[in-house]
Image (cartoon, rainbow, N blue to C red):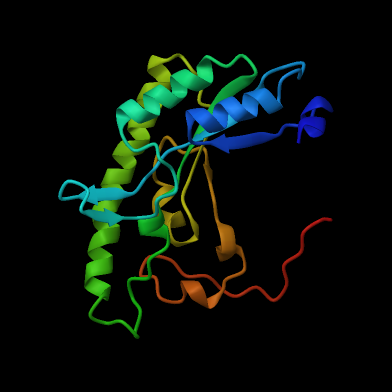
Length: 191
């Protein structure tokens, strides 16, 4: 990784904690320019004082204070340069809401997905606000997932979307009410 960065290639890593940023800064010490990092912010929804958790526990950065503190920690490390953020909405992208095998759960899942859309959009705007307040250029803002591409594409702060396994069109995406994929006959990547 360090060798790629030294050779002038654009390489970025996602960080979600002060400890991770500090470790990366130590590893990347000695590069001619700061190593670029992207902040991973939690997009899950917590209800009833955190008793009900909707989404995945992907990042420990949940509150405005935690996000701001992690940004400050990264800014204090001259070996790193914060260039973007990532806010992945698993409770929208990863839940089938039209599954014929779970007809009684479908309305609940549909509600979770719909309820989460505005919450995730507000979280993303909060991240944009923090970056602006700290005068950091948000070069990239990643979000979305295969199951929420048509929703995330409407979220103005996002500069890129992640499609993941949806590129292959697996049966995992057969039971979404908002999106459909056609299975790929072939999928090739350069090696």
